[in-house]
Amino acid sequence: MSRPYNFSAGPAALPEEVLECAAAEMLDWHGSGMSVMEMSHRGKEFVSIYEAAEVDIRELLAVPKEFSILFMQGGGIAENAIVPLNLSRGEQADYVVTGNWSERSQKEARKYCQVNISASNSPDGHTTLPAPATWQLRDDARYVHVCTNETVHGVEIHELPDLKALGSQAPLVIDMSSHMASRSVDWSRVGLAYGGAQKNVGPAGVTLVFVRKDLLGHAMQHCPSAFDYKIVSDAESMYNTPPTYGIYIAGLTFQWLKKQGGIAAIEQRNIAKAKLLYDFIDNSDFYTSHVAKNCRSRMNIPFFLADDKLNDAFLAQAKARGLLQLKGYKSLGGMRASLYNAMPLAGVEALVSHMQEFEQKRA
Ligand SMILES: *Cc1c(COP(=O)(O)O)cnc(C)c1O
Image (spheres, rainbow, N blue to C red):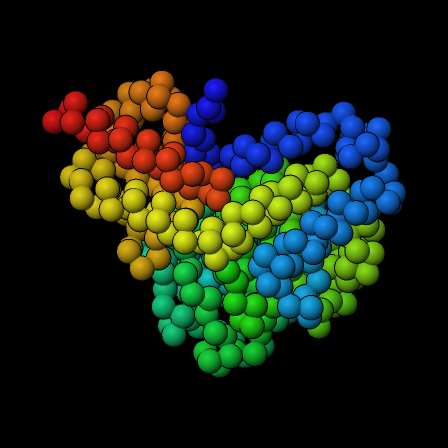
């Protein structure tokens, strides 16, 4: 029996093979007599799961050895505080606003440092990407924060800015919660990257942080120890009990990604999936996308019906054909299709067929 296609923005669909493997290993992981949930995080069984997950994501994303990979808790929203607590020293930080999530990041950071809004697309309703050459970057900023994929508004930064070329010496901090492991990362342009797992790599409860080691050790005095990147890095993510089961599922997802051919292969699939849906929307008068073509997200695609009185019927008929969780974000309305790594091309084809038939029935 095949499962429905789940377009949720997060927590989101995981590869079926990952869920099947976890189900098969639920009561007894590899002959240990224990579920992964029941293991000491310091025992050799869990340490082997943790180490494999770390090695695999490092290999998949080609993370240089100058970076520590931390498995933390608190999600992207906690990172909105944890980043300034660790990097700002209470001084200046630059924020680029491109949508709902970067807006929330800059607001939270104001509790801890002096926030400068370097650029904002809010006059355009968060549908464009301010060109990096126009960003107002401060000489004394401790870091520059961007959200590289805006999950709500569907704006993606396809090429990371080269801050040095823009005259800034500050490290780039990226919130990549909703496209982590969907494409390659140019680490030469990044100081720190973070993301919650529940969009593309695992269940809610695990937050991955990739931090260049020279940025460790500058946390503000009142930063909670469990959120001090240096303490977490020195303890190899075991200063406190890490989210063990979530790390295990993320590790299975990393193994699945390797079997798919790695990030380059998955990125090509993601490009093809997004193109199929955008091309259909662009060729229709019935559906529209508001996002400028140069910054459209491959992962989260908000779209709108010509008449929003038809939204409920669209969603009900989608659900009846096994197309789940297409309702748009509450403040935007309309629809949103999230096409994360686990969404097969066939799922997008099924969505496009539904959209086509729904339109034809009304025409
Ligand atoms: C989902 C999301 C967050 C928030 O994640 P939480 O796990 O709820 O803290 C932050 N940033 C982006 C880009 C997201 O997609």
